[in-house]
Length: 274
Image (cartoon, rainbow, N blue to C red; front, side):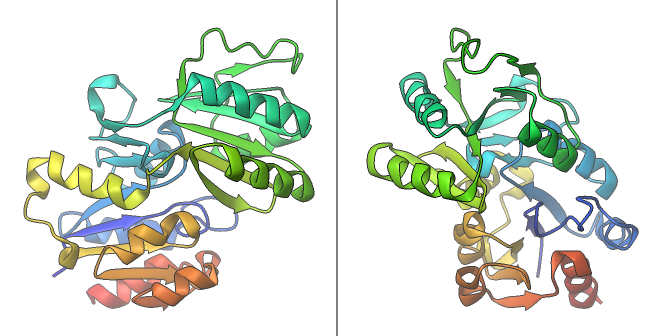
């Protein structure tokens, strides 16, 4: 019996406009009260709250930054919602900033519900469009004004740029830095703390909230599309990959549904629960 559904967001749940369509809203709303829902994403909290609102699950827990930040719920971030946090230390941030500068790549730093972006450029505008949120701080004269005086730790660093530059940067970071890397797109490199992932975040959450004490891996269905969903889909009984997922994720999936732009998650849930 399914008691909990854990779902990735970008490339899995959202359509090509990066939105929740009416069909998906209807399916989720019909399941409210029958199962619990948890979103598990590389996004920051405020980039998930509006999605929770659309789905009708506004006070559900959240797994953010690929498991580096786990929240008990709420519709606005407060530190008392934090169940688990793991961060990249200041020393590593400084080294990563220098590498991004050398590669002439865009740098964004995320901590709790704060987004600091190096400058107002194509990449910043793209992320605003994709996530429907705005940066908290923008440095207009990068790298000269990109100061780290107020940044002591980060839940995620995102470096964006031309594919070849990101290729070289990823190789360099893998050799020298103790962090977790996810290539969410050819032009995106997401950096999170070592040994954090969505599965660890989910099971920490289940062990921290009393109403989930009866939920086991046998009762969980999870959906994903990318490398950062691998542990999550492996560690539950019903790990479902969307059609547009990576081949590695499809290889370990319990089942494969339609792509995100074909409402794959909603179709699978509707068929399964009917």
